Length: 300
Image 1 (tube, rainbow, N blue to C red):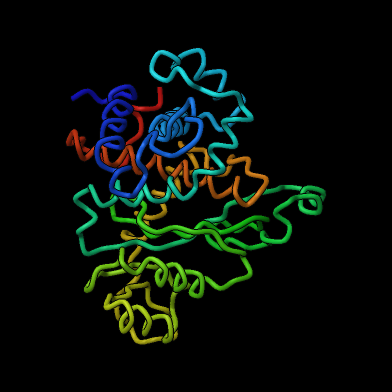
Image 2 (cartoon, rainbow, N blue to C red):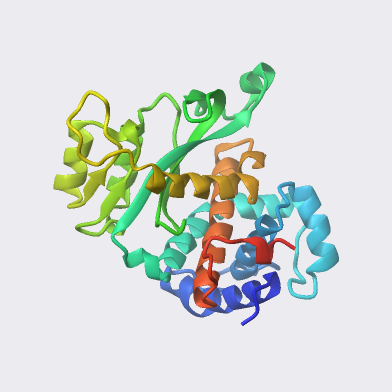
């Protein structure tokens, strides 16, 4: 098989239409009322293409898609219609990400990585005061990058090759362990008994470790603190795996340039970038590419 964007989109389209959408209860063109010009499968494929090409602006993307992709997707809407469809599709995007994760070999592996990274939503005081996100977002500090930000932390549980499994956003004022516990409780069916969850020092705490061990039947591994008996060591090499996943999301998939101005907008734009990452990893496994998280073949 070829490793290029067109091949990925065609393969993904067939897989979504034949297996994934029927499996999650989305049956194309069966709902009552007027049928959309752009169906759900086409929307998902176009979102993958947009973010693999690194086009963060919806305005630029619609111009590009109408000029270059109308042969494959004749029903591309205008910018306002596109934005509305994307904001309404967060649930669909999340469900498809989960199914793509299930279809990769690493979903059955024992290791899961968990961490968070800043997702800025504004850079000025005026933006903060006027934003529709003011009641939900907040100020936070990222110690690993030594910077303050206003927005949300993105929490991610992924496989060692970077495939997203569980994700969510939260106010920075809420503790890291509290948010992660809530996410794991909600999606506990995606954590298998005996699984090893690798986190950083921020996940240190008897209550959280007891939750992972007793409630999930999993094992928490994290770097040792200076004031405790050594157990796991520094884990620097393993910790770099999840940092490299965030680097891919921010560097190649323009995560910090999401442009979301409402809760629905932020969630859908983050989900779209995670979908692009998931689709690439899934396709790279399918064609036996040597580096499963590599996006280079699809960014042009």
